[in-house]
Image (cartoon, rainbow, N blue to C red; front, side):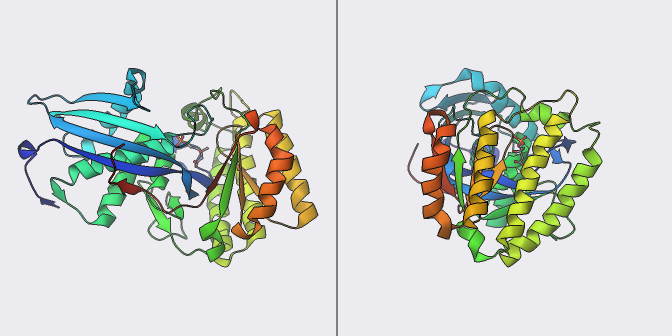
Length: 355
Ligand code: PMV
């Protein structure tokens, strides 16, 4: 690392990043230490579901760091504890931010109350802003820059570390991915072209606050009766999924991805205390999708994150039929018939326009 300027020479500045959400195919559920995963995971980086975050910094001539946070143009002091926790966690890894006033402005492309988790896109966008800030003082390659942003994003929210690259991103050590790490996500490039343009239509079944947070769900994997089997199965499923991704085997892909989603929810249903995040409409959608797949021989595949919403994954060539089916048969199960059309995306982009 080469120091470019001393901290005390710093002036005011601003940076804006747009960073996407991601949807896991093999799920991360259970953690240890400081946000380290109990098992490896892999996700599609999304495109339409993203956060744009701007960070302004001004030297304040004092030792402390002050933060003001704005969401959609409105100051939101109630978001500060989460943001301050992020800055506390990353402090050992970054050039000290003390001596600066930070103003952070954020906007999500998807409705705040949609039930779509914004932690992956928001934490990765904020991590990128911090890394851009640090780049004034430290010379780093682009590869080092994104890797560090992934580490910082992970400290904010585990799954956020997979939002730093486009396409498919793996996180957590795994025998079949040489450069995989528990500390950061790595892009996984050995992918058949069919998966580079995969579609994800997110059916918004429930916009309400989740009854059990991911943080609590992760904790409940400690002492969970099936924890060891689950972690072992995630390794196995990831090995098999890598083969499906590489070969373009859509049948194997569907079998593994749906199995992972249901196993994630099975872990919730068998925790102590147990809980269920799916809703009756989640199950109605799953049944209809399975019947549709049987009838049409197409590859519409469901996955779930830690909530009631359903992600429908399918190849681009099947888009027309899938959208017609969603519109006529599935929209009725969504709150206000609302769904979001997304697809595999290219990863974060620095913005030249101010938010
Ligand atoms: O990053 P967290 O702590 O919100 O956990 C996310 C967990 C899942 O979305 C359920 C799975 C995953 O790998 O993204």
